[in-house]
Image 1 (cartoon, rainbow, N blue to C red):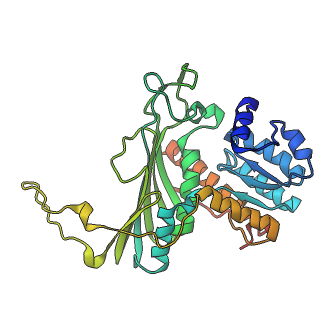
Image 2: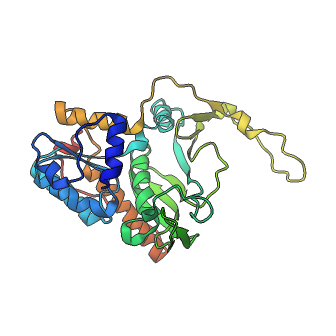
Image 3: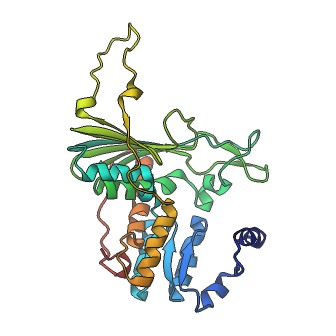
Length: 339
């Protein structure tokens, strides 16, 4: 959107051909794939233009701010016969890939609980410069941590543990006053923290806290603990620690004496048993292979709509202060979501 910024980036990376004119780019027959990474509130009209121009579609999440529009994009892409996909990068994080490997090998036994902690302190911008764009904290510009993060948690939970069946969510604006990139004060209108519990098919209970107002005292900016009958694991962005049943300590509650167990030392760090690429790059390459070689790619605009649906239901749960069921989204198979 900024010619000056794009020109600088193009020069740094050796790219000679660039433009900020979307219509001109879409009219060029040599451009066959449209990748939308704009702010959320600009995505739907731009993707519709790209579909109408016959381009294959790859999108950042969320693909829309409501389920109806997200499903509309999927159906339009299906009707146009173009390939389509959504960024679901966390599935290719080394830490989560290690969790998936453990589950595939039966390490956990029966999984019954998942606990996630995500976020860090995003400075208000008055005394210390903020490290996130100000639109993230303006509801009128498509901001809000529910629509941002519950889209992530939908595909993480669905792919690693099973379909999400219900959600209970509450959220908050903890810091109502912020300062933007130019040092100008503004009021926070979008929620900055969300505390959500999910019921997953098979009896698994998952709880994930997402917050831009939390000071980190854990192994990483995002950690996910999985508890099963035979063992537990805690994954960060890159590393994963495990504790099998036979290696589980036996603490006894007694607050009158110092605890003799160093709990952190009772976990074993998993080694890197394979090479891991950049998560965004890994999925992008799979999509390009899907377009060029017709290889399967299941992370479609329908999967994107599922994430938007969970965010929308999370908002409803917060607003109505209750559990909300997550019904299945049925839209039919197609080229972009073929297994």
